[in-house]
Image (cartoon, rainbow, N blue to C red; front, side, top):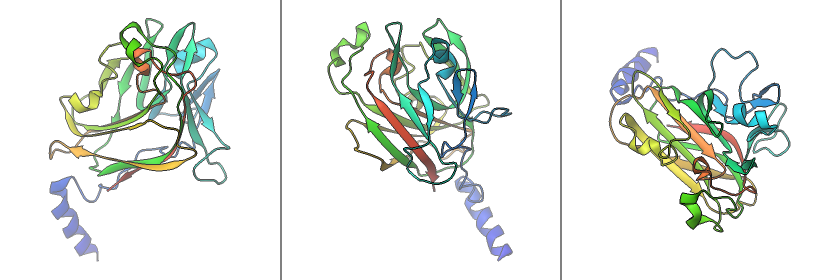
Length: 253
């Protein structure tokens, strides 16, 4: 049995390493949370490595959080189980992003954005990302000058996943006008990419699956997953009534 396994591992290593192919990343069930001051964080209090982060580091300065733990309304019930509740909100007249992403918050930029390190180390080649979502959209009631044409329409949630290769993780400025334009699809080092929009009230949790389209046979070095309760939140556009519950994510092989 051991010899057969070693042979299989050798054969499949050319296609992205069969042995490590089922790689997941920490806290994809969103069960682990901590709090520093008024800021909720999706990682342990003394975490040495951060996998997931949020815009809460900036929002909590205004007494609000865009992503918080949800212990009652979860996709899979059980002791210690939680989901993430992502909400689009407004602070001082400005729409603020309800997001959760793989990566690390670095610092606030110009009071309305942040510098973020996108992605975490990852070498698997999954076929898709699945999970459970309960989305409650609202009508877009806040829109930037450039996005006035979508005001009054229904908000959308967005979940995007990109596998990338490169020596360093990408550092982005969330106030950049191109930040919210499916950067994963156009990123020079993209190995695979997938995105899904949710345009209607799901009336409770539903299971979703986002297929990954591979653009090369290369082995990725990192994975970027982002989820937002408002598709255009980085362009300061969305509904202050939109709420997304996300739970039990999984990479499928």
